[in-house]
Image 1 (tube, helix red, strand yellow):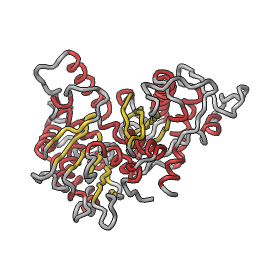
Image 2: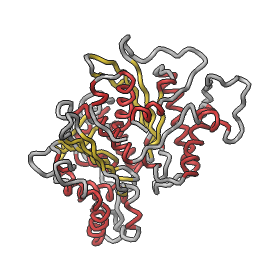
Image 3: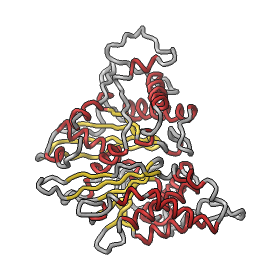
Length: 433
């Protein structure tokens, strides 16, 4: 299937019987786009207005929402649990009905729902359960009972039987599950705004289930940058601890054991690191995922609380030394019994009451998503990825993205906007089928 056809298949064809409310802040030449991402560690949305100007799609972010603290659709062991999945599905319904349709006035025809690659490795019946819970929650209208009316569905149709909403919504709201390859493609797309000129950069996304890595490199005979990504499965922050189940209570073993296991698991990444088209050939490099989020809160607390709109998605420069420090903190902070614990929240001088509250909330969210062992594994993956890709080179720049949890959803929404509106950026990256 071509990329264009694939994108077209993702568009949600949902209609509301009543006229859609006015779009949020949309100017006459703009169109709104909203994306809900169902992740292993949380549910989030992003809403933007886009317009085609001088052959280029320009956009503004008008709303975001992140319910990581309320739980994702996978538990801390990376498993799909019915009760937790229902809670996550209710969060999706609340975002869809209350936030996007009612509060922000988004036409349901312009809302896309997808699941991240955290669910790609699940068995078919587990993926079916994921979609079933989300469709059921959307159809019921969540706990508040928001009404969802679809074109062609008579008012007398009842959907109170088990699985009834599956058949009604499966075509209207397909909920695609991204492969790691596709997830990295959209993430790379979402990072273009930080490097609009050269368009040549790399990204390592250390997710809960898997580590994804990709880059753009010179196109050779083509004037377009080429896209390359890691296709092998490398375990992520929540998957790696399972390989060290018996090592967490041995302080003198944990660093050595963790380094050895991480290095072994990262071997596939080495094949993508070298050469002119390799990941370590890029001068601009981004780190994403839960481990990068932890790094920002623990080692770059002041920058994570920088002034600016809460919707701001921006790069914060870090160094290989920062990554090493994060690893040391996460592998040496222990209680009296020798077990790993969360490090204390960093003290930052001169914070306003609002900034202090935001810092406390962020720390609580981090602890609600990852346990200390998982953060130690994430720190190990960060440290050895940075070493493998030679990010300590003085000529290179290494960044963690503040509010980076929205990068994938942003790239997804941007791609939809550029596919519909056109413009030179829509064909800027030569993406594989």
